[in-house]
Length: 248
Image 1 (cartoon, one colour):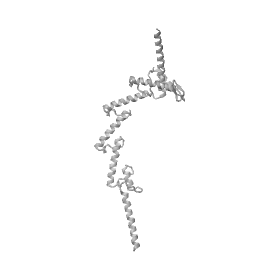
Image 2 (tube, helix red, strand yellow; image 1 turned 90 degrees about the horizontal axis):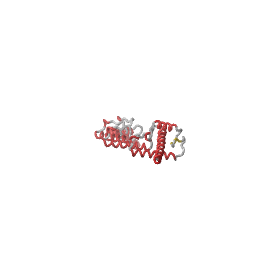
Image 3 (tube, one colour; image 1 turned 30 degrees about the vertical axis):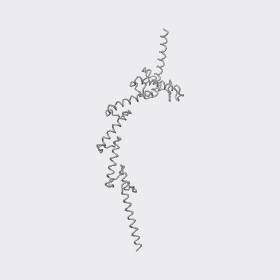
Image 4 (cartoon, helix red, strand yellow; image 1 turned 90 degrees about the vertical axis):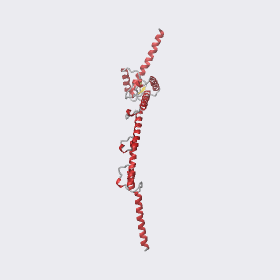
């Protein structure tokens, strides 16, 4: 009799343990083994394709829906293509519009092609124009081909010329280049690009370094070399003329 009682008690214990494990697995957020309910719930919360909504409880489905709404709201705020505007609340739509206008303003300030100027306020347009002018001035100071000399002020033009003179002086003191030198500019392999730029500047009578533009840095430097060379010759001729005038 005692043995029967012990066996029955042991079976009851095992049955209760099994029910307890099953209940724990079915709790929201629990980690079941294999493809358990807990893992499926997490997959649904994260919006994974392995999610099986039919296996969720009503409370879990509601939580999954709210998580999806939050993910969509964040996607809309970031301007992602997965954004579903129709799922947003009026307040969220307004916040998304504000975020989009801020992104557009930043794009305009940085000169990014996605900039929509029509969406800017008058103050933002003015700030954008100032940013464009600053970028152009920096490009001219550095001798970059994108420089638009016509947009510079007289003071900026003078500063650009002084910067070019400093670069020329630094090049004169630089060690020999692997491809040789062309009128103070280092050549990488050969000096054909510099020669082409010099010839172009000579053919077009270029007298301002800011007019030396193009996609090739060696071409631009060749053009600048022509301008610098002619500027030096012009200064020398001016001195000679002055001396002749004094003699007269």
